[in-house]
Length: 192
Image 1 (cartoon, rainbow, N blue to C red):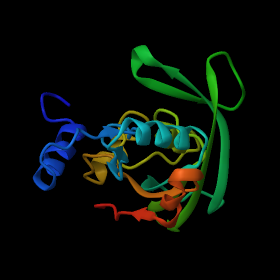
Image 2: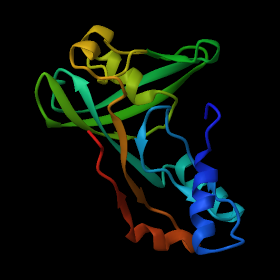
Image 3: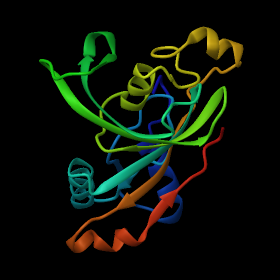
């Protein structure tokens, strides 16, 4: 935030232009700092709880586009590992085995464009802090622009000053009152 307006505040201002007196919407999930793309907000507490539950039970799927160093092989793969968070250092560690404090992570990727810097489409099956960034770095293909888990010299060489990660798609498989959302496939193109 750094003194600026929050997403909730910005969305509320836009909503008030169309509906004076509208309540402030609430963010239903999070994106890592520097990640661009789709963010789901709810206008009621009931909707917020339903969407949060949808994310928790994997009834709402997130897909991302990113650019990584090199081209992963194989070109399509589902990665399974464990992630341990160090809140004090604001960093996570990817482990190849279960360990105290570690949570399972599942990340599926597909190479969309190969090259020295490859474009990937990534589907999250779990949604943990820094999951895509840490897991891609752990297999030797850090995200372009990621100095925390990645290759600072490579980023500098490619004049990349920001993270090349975008939440590009949301899909729903909800039941009951919210099933009408299943018809939606929300997408956005990344700026990179």
